[in-house]
Every structure is written in C-alpha cells, then in structure tokens.
Image (cartoon, rainbow, N blue to C red; front, side, top):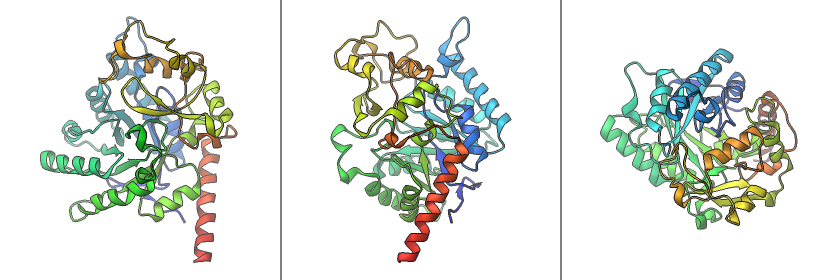
Length: 361
C-alpha cells in the first residue's frame, strides 16, 4: 500500500509530485487535476510573460500577472496541494518567488541552479514550503549548510533529479549516460545528507528523472525516498495545458528520438528530435535579438535560437519553430488519457509489484 508524503507539516495522500514543465505545459489545468487526485500539482512559471502578454507588453510585469492568474485559477479548481516550479536561472527569479509566497502557494520547487537565498524571501506567517531540486549530494549539502547557517532554516524536502529527466539537466554531457551518476547512485548519498539533520528536522527526499511506472515508484521508495516527481507521464493527459500537437509528439516518439541537446542557457537537455532541432544543428536558427532576457546565463549573440520562444511555439503546437523537452521514458506514451486514469494506473502497478515482491521474499 502506497503511503502518504509529509512535507512541511502538509500531508499529501499520494506521494507523487507533478513536475513543473515550461513553457506552458504545466499550468493551472494540469496542476489542479493532479492535486484533486491527492498528489502535488505544480505550475511552471517559466515564460508566463509570453502567455499573458498585455498591451503594451512588459515581460517582467506580465510574468507576475500571469503567475497570479494561474494560481488563482488553480485555487478555484482544487483544495489540494499546489506548488510553483521556479528556475534559479530565471532573470525574474526573485519576482516569481515573492509572488508565489504572496499568493499562498503550498510549495516552491527551485532548480536549474542553487537557490542559496530562497529562505530570505519568506514573510511572517508564510506557509509556503521550500523544496530545492538538486542533482548531487554535494549540492544538497551546500544548500542545507547555507540555509541553516544564514537563515536557521532547512529544506522542507529535497527533490533529487537524475540524468534521465526531461528538459535541462544538472550534469555534464559525459555524465548523463554514466551509471555512477544514475539516480539509483545519487539517492543514497542525498538520504545520508538529509538524515544528518534528523535531530533538527525531517527532510523527505523525493526521487525524480525518468520515473514512469508504478514499479519505478516502488523501487525508489524502497530505497528510502519518501515520494517521486514525475513529468512526462502527465503530458499525454487531457488536462495537460499543452496543445494536442505537443502531446502527439510524445505519442509518436520512439526510443531513439530522445536526444541530448546543448541548450542556449549553457546546460545539456533532453528533448524529442525534430526538424527544428535539425535546423539548429545546421546553423539555420540564429536569433535576431533578445526580446526579454528571460534567462540569466543566456547571451543571444552566442545562442543558436531563443529557447523561451522555441518552447512557447511548441506549447502552441508550432513544432516547425519549436521542440518538446521530454524524459528518457517519454517514448512509452501511447495515448491521451485523464490524470485520474494515469494516477490510478500508477497505484495499481505499485500495489501489484509490491505484492509480488512480498510474495517472493
């Protein structure tokens, strides 16, 4: 029987966190649907200024308004747990954190960099739990030490994202397919870091990256993880906020279509190869300028394309001018189904594998 997840005093009946996927892939529609089934629904705030473009356009202000609107919509649709995924690399990271806390989201999930000052944004009476996303025990240790030393605060949970994840990866290219950097190898070391603070605070460790089945969930919980984060499995749901064309890209993908690309933000990423990415390789996608400077580390003069615009195009279904990020097991997608069916299937798979394991023990 799958057990609840406890983070920051909050009980989550289904220990599954829906990964934050931008641009526009996980908004209030998907997040609320997952929360209504007992998991944690997560809104990605990346690129919201494109989706909520006002006249006259002001990207930074539009992002704030867009995040407020998405959280409002989510809270209207569910009484369940809602979080926001905020990349540290965003140029408006501070705005997004302050807005998330002010709008009383349950969680902030912060990755794509070390969120060393995240607790400094908490306000008196805030109930928002802070969850960093890391790809190594070293990163987990640094965050715990800095937060505790500077703010007398420890993470409410830690998400450990392995190299089979979709989107940007916190690994060097040569590490991605090296077994010594696999999620199975990272989790035990992060658990040791979390347990070293057990006398002060219980820090649940969440496994992420390439997790697609109930059997996967069982394996990582058996290793000591308190729950899992999953992204790709929710893309091919009716409630996912992406276009049907985007979802179909997942369904049509074969295993060999999942490739590692060099992102303009200076990190490797996993995506589904298509004609746009082929044009990138041929040098046919040079940007004319930078409309918003959304990522701190992106220099458009040395970038082959604008990543935020490419992801926004894909969200709308324009795969000729964009592409889909996806986890290593996204090729397993075979149909569009409801979030309820996806989660029910995961629980059935989990319970079935658990029963077989106990029987064979």
